[in-house]
Structure formats: C-alpha cells, structure tokens
Image 1: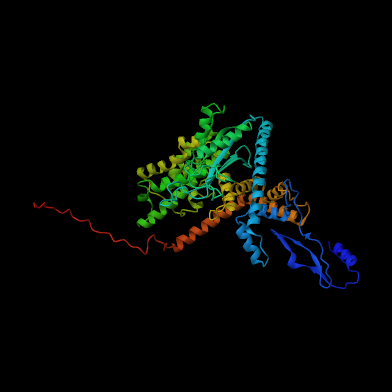
Image 2 (image 1 turned 90 degrees about the vertical axis):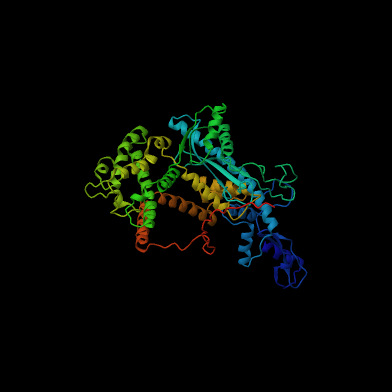
Length: 554
C-alpha cells in the first residue's frame, strides 16, 4: 500500500520533498474497521481510499462487509455483553467506538447465520446417534433423552406486574442419553417480544405486520407449556427417523405427556418410558424429611433452634446416604435393576440401624458404611453430622427413619429412577445459555441466535465453536495463526477442566472442603442478621371481644 503511494507521489510530483501521512480529516469508519487515504503536506497529492480491513464476499448487492465486524459479532454471541458493552470497552480504551446501528446490523446478519448453521449441526448429531446405534447392534431409530427448559424470568415472579406469566422468552432442549457426551439433539426457542415495537402492538398477531417480527407466540399463549415445546422437539427427532423410548425429566416437567400423546395419536410407534432425575429426587427427599412431623423431636439437641439446625443437616445427610447406597449398588450389580432392588431392600434396614448407632447391618449389607477393620462408618465420614451423632433406639424412631428411607429407596421410587439418569447436562446447558443471554439483558431481536451459539458451544467446545462459526460467517480464522493457537488452548483447557471436575481427586477435595466449612460453622455458629421487614415491625393486636349492639327505634 505505502509502496503504491510513494510511487504514485513520485510520478505526480517528482521534485516534491514533502512528508506523506494519513489524511485524518478524510478517514471513514466502517464499524470497527477504517478506510484511510494518504496526503502530502507540501504538494496537493491525495491518494485513493484504502481499506484497512479484509472484506467478506457478499452474496447480495451493496457494500461489502468488513470481516472484523462479523468476527466481533461471533465472539460477542459467546459472551454476555452486547453492543452497548462493546462500545464501553472501545471508549474506555480510548478507541472510537462503532455506531450502534452498524453493530446491530452486523449482529442481525451473524445471528441468522449461526442459527442456520447450528440447526445443520444438530441434524448431524442426530445422524451420528443412528450410526452409533447401528455399530452397537441396537435399533438405529431409538433414542433416549433428557429434557429441560429455561426462561428469561422466573415464571412465578410477576405478582402485581402482569396477569400473564412474567417470562417472555423460553428455550427447551433435548439431549441424548445414548452416549457419555449427552449432546444436544433438538432445541426450541419461543419469544413473545418483537424488536419492531412501532408495528407490533400488544394485540398485534405474530408475523402480521410489516418488517421483521422476532416474536413467534402470541402474548396470551402460555409460555410455561413445556408439553407444547417438547412436542415440537420430538417432531424434529421424528423427521430424522428417531423416536424417544426413555425420557428423563425433573418431577415438575410435562415433557413425558408430549411423548405419550404422540404415541397415542399414532405419530410415533415407540412406547415412551418416563424416569425421574435423581438430583431433583434427592432435593425433594430433603424437603420431605424437613417437613416430616415428629422427626424434629427426636433430634439429639436441647434447644428448639438447635433441633431445627440439626434436622436440616440430617435431611442433607440422609438424602446423600440413600443416593450413595443406590449409586454403589448400581455400579456393583452392573445396572441390573432387579439385583439392585433386592440388595437395597436389605440396605434400608441397615440404614435405619446405622443412624441409631448399630453398624452390624452396615457391615453386611451397606456398600458405603462399615465398621470392619479400619474402615470408617458413614457418620464418621459425613460432612453434615458430627462423629458421635446417634438417635435413640426406640420403635417410634425406627418407624420415622424407615419412612425417610422408603421415600428414596422404596419400590415406587426405585422404579422411577431405575436407570440412574439425571438432567445434569441439561442444567449445564441452561447455565451456558445464561452466560450468553443473561437475565439482566433482554435480547429481543437476536435471542435465538445467541441461544444457538450457546448450544453449539456446549456441543463442540468454546474453541472449536468459534472457529466453526467464524468459518460459517465467511470470516475463517487462518490455521496456524496466533488466534487459531489461542482458541486451541482454550479448547484444550476446557476439556482438561471438565475431566478434572469429574475426577475422584476433585470430588474428594470438595468433600474435605465441606467438612472444614461445617467444622468452622459448628465452632462459631454464624448468626443470621438478616430479617425480612426488620424496619417495619408489626405489633400483634389483642383480639377484640365481640360487642353487643342494641337497635334503637326511631
């Protein structure tokens, strides 16, 4: 570029000895890129305008887009900040920021590209599941899934603000349970918000006005209808020849009803089987123990406040003990549900005796507690209870403990959790989506694009996702460059971190940390200073006695 300027200047003004520099008064900004021309400070020489950026090959008529503008939008879709946040970063670095309109235009273009590309990627994931089933000798058209949904606002938090459910955007995801990766295979995004506010009024129907409409459900539609969104995802799977057999959800989901209704209608030919998420079952188990009548009275403490604290910690420990027994039996008997049920029928009695101080049954039937040789008992290993914790040996206490154990290890719950599956990967996907669509920012126009970015990130990893999406947007990252090496390091670090968090070393460290925290808590007994409506005390008024009224004749 400079050689071209010097040669041209020498040809036009061969005797000029002036200094050539950028003509800052004529520079033009193109988003985060610039166009400049050179000029001489002595003669009248002015060069042509030079693009200080690479252009993207356009499929439509008009000015070509700067590659850096699309690359920035691909990166922005992976993080929580929006165009306003990027402007603050530029201005805080003393760099002229791109205009809001230009960045929004680039964001709209990139969002549509990402959405289309990720849909194709999900189709490839579904084809891969069929190939894996064929290699395993299984039915290639059967898929087992876990499903969960998330909302931009809690759907029960709008009392007094709106008569509808306060959530206005929702994402429902289905992930396969056929492999250890638990890849996302289907997704559905719904939104009541339209970016074209001047045309889309409250009563305006979706897609009935001029211009772009980002809303795809009406304002009066129930956004919490997970059955409806799950049915859309199931139909996507059906279009690619996959039918759901086993579906794992949390206890408050209605996704199973969607699979069941499709089977009864004859749309699918596979009878769906519903299983409950073990993590949500454990949470419900803890709440069941806390609310159980008569259990607080048998806690070995003197004061009522101490009994309350001990009951909460006992609920945590009992839920963890039951789940640990189930996990150990599930691994020992190689996922044979019949043998697991038989073994746990004996372990239930051992757990009851264990909390009453008798560990003889644990030595024989428990897989996580034993007083044999140098092995520690469950209460000695527990992070929630003290080593000397023991309930009285009475029939009433044993009956209460049996009810606690039966909730999790009874025949009914064992049938609902016999596959020991959970929705942890679905919850992790929700957190990944929350990183790109934070609750304090509303992305009206590009909500779907950002969600698809998060899903592609979960399925492919952060480094690979950026590389693939940049290539899809027409701004490929050159292999072997510093940027490519940096993204490769991010990908490797992410995979290494995931393996570490699944290792026994990490779980042991978390357990020991929990032990230390509870020891500190027992020593200092943290006082809770927060109290609701502390500055608005309400006086309790004495009940008024009923008064006798006499009717006076006029």
